[in-house]
Length: 143
Figure 1: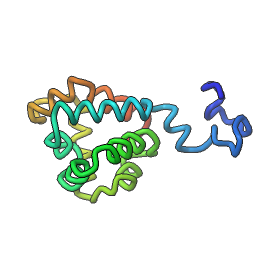
Figure 2 (figure 1 turned 90 degrees about the vertical axis):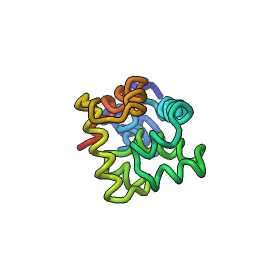
Figure 3 (figure 1 turned 45 degrees about the vertical axis):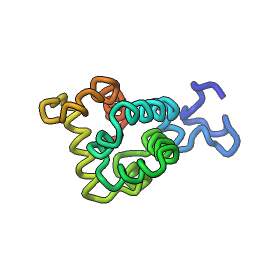
Figure 4 (figure 1 turned 90 degrees about the horizontal axis):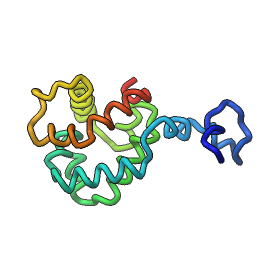
């Protein structure tokens, strides 16, 4: 189906109206899942679990260390289709304290407050993390 027909308000373009599915409509406004997954893998290769602990908290970072392939896919999918940060937290099993931390980190990046971010994470911000955060913000992720 052509992209112009996705989330156009006209059901029936796809079987089962998948072109009007909420997650499909959200994903249409976000970076492609595959691109997010590649970015996460590259960021992990460059910065290791230290960056992921900084972003997501200790619990999720430990899980990522134990099963990278699963978690890169899960995180990329959650970033792509989650209506907002709360939905993302549910899909990734974040605790409320990790969610509060994650929200704060995203806000720091969005606001450009690099002086409040450790040097290793500043590198990730400059290597594409800031662009991902902005695209997520623009699509309503922080609502």
